[in-house]
Image (tube, rainbow, N blue to C red; front, side):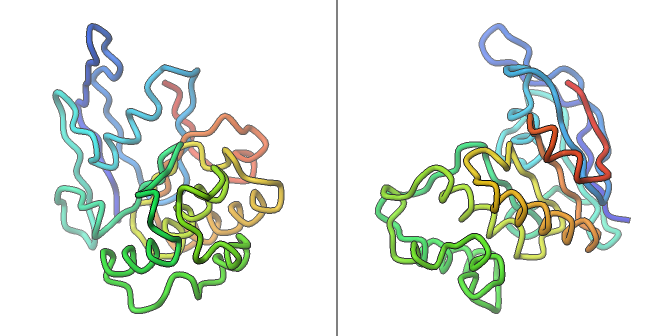
Length: 202
């Protein structure tokens, strides 16, 4: 079975120990990290994605039965709470770059989710002209349509309208049914209730 393991992870910023000896094995399904603001949820997700290295501890995963370091480019995807990109890049250019990086055989702007998120009218819009919610949808589009083994989402509903909430719920459930490991933080209790999620309080 696939899993992502964080073992004995600790990290300190300045004099504050943000994460202390965190141990957990994430398995296929939805896991939600909860806790008050400033407790370290975003830091933990960044460690899980390997974008932040802990002071001590390690992150590993088992993909196709082989334990190895997580390759977030090859095996996973991460959507930060406040996603952004080079301001002069258009959505079409961004998606073309993601296709190349992820080694996809199809165009992301032709996916069902692209239309459901109503991104067609923004295809040639540069990032600097996009609203926060639209930027979030672009990153979620990539995360939820590339068949990633590990999907990490930091406050995924922030900036989304009610219709986009429904679309997001549907596609997270689809990825759950596909056997993917989905790790996310969220303060949105109504959103969380749609999933048979494992809860971890920090």
